[in-house]
Amino acid sequence: MTAIESFTGDANPYPGGDPYADYRTADFPFTQYADLADRRLGASVVAANDEFFAQRENLLVPGRAEFVPEHFGHKGKVMDGWETRRRRGASADHPWPTAEDHDWALIRLGAPGVIRGIVVDTAHFRGNYPQAVSVEGASVEGSPSPEDLLSGDVKWTTLVPRTRVGGHAANGFEVAVEQRFTHLRLNQHPDGGIARLRVYGEVAPDPAWLAALGTFDVVALENGGRVEDASDRFYSPPAHTIQPGRSRKMDDGWETRRRRDRGNDWIRYGLVARSEIRAVEIDTAYLKGNSAGWASLSVRDGEDGDWVEVLPPTRLQPDTNHRFVLPAPAVGTHARVDIYPDGGISRLRLHGSLTQTGAAWLEARHRELGG
Image 1 (cartoon, helix red, strand yellow):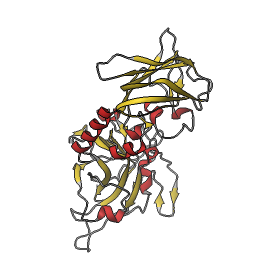
Image 2 (cartoon, one colour):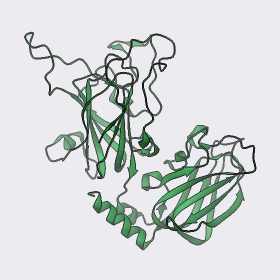
Image 3 (cartoon, rainbow, N blue to C red):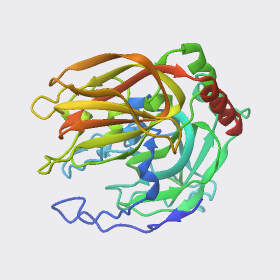
Image 4 (cartoon, rainbow, N blue to C red):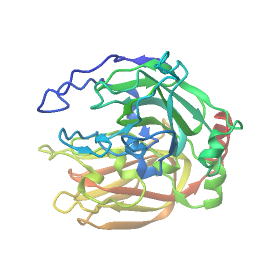
């Protein structure tokens, strides 16, 4: 684990105008991965030792934190983040917190996985951010209570050691622990406020659960599918297409800029493992004047395999969920959707099951990650 372009120290007091004008951030390489702490995947802040000024649930709210200068409540300034009260020492002779004093929050990841990077965002916490943060991870099956997680029976692994951070900044950390985690413990030393927590990584599903399901969506993010590349990310990210549930608004899908050439747009996916696809859904929900005109689906078996078209270019209707039963099962490890000429889709579902080799690989990977 190494910090990437670390920020330390206070930010200047809010000068007025755009509150993000002096926000400190960087391009973190691990943000290409999915956010395992996304509420849409089922993530939750299950407990915190203190949330006097601002609620712990704000840590996982989608989008960047908002700042309203004149917004005050009965307990003080209302902040869009998790903020604890100021810690005090034991007596007037020693009024300062001890070196061990800290506040903590327990986070259940929306999908278990291997963590590649973490962002602890202190946006708008300019002089009231923690001096340092640390993050630990644990792998606990089932639905443990906060008491279960805090018991001495759980093994916690350090992902981010105690590290100084800066106020009003995106504090990013690479993580190089090749294990599968289900829960995190975010610590702030000794107290203060954190606006957002983002946990980037690769979903590592439970093979036993997928085997019990039999047929499932083999490209869904929650099952271990992933977006590998896309031709265009102008209006919204292609990873939206494999999020759980149906799209709820236009920007909850994938939309490209308008093409002025003779080409077409596309997304390439990695499946959870080698799979047999039998049915396809392509949804254009909420895309009415900007949905793709036509779409095709191709499948590739292995990194060096040839692309085989399994659904030819087919006319799409706006704001419609299209369902296709393939004439023969398509076996592969990767899939590609081409849309013509541009526009967008909101969701892609590839219904099928793991092949014998795919199931064996997934079980071996699960054991390798400590599952």
